[in-house]
Image 1 (cartoon, rainbow, N blue to C red):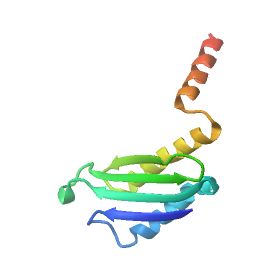
Image 2 (image 1 turned 90 degrees about the horizontal axis):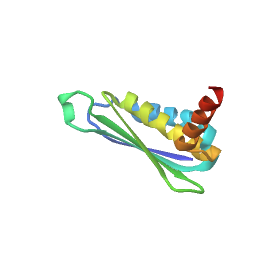
Image 3 (image 1 turned 180 degrees about the vertical axis):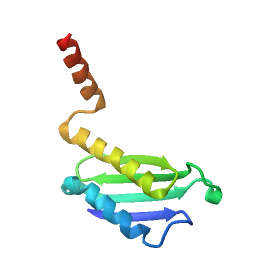
Length: 116
């Protein structure tokens, strides 16, 4: 799995790439054999004005399927990365198990109705 971090954000610390690479590799290590490439793009939407404007997009190129793209929006780059990474892991788990969110929701509904 090759990891690429792209930043379009002026206020990030110099070691952000190193830390982000470690966070991504640690967060996706379970799915490492299924991933060819991971690309993370961090963008500050409105510059130095502040607010919830840092967008992180995680693009996963899988070995056998379509690419997975998730994003997170937060007030800082680390929080946006974690949010996007959590969403990417959820998508990978759903795809790996052969169930999507709709199937999981239907299973919960069926269990709920059966308990009544």
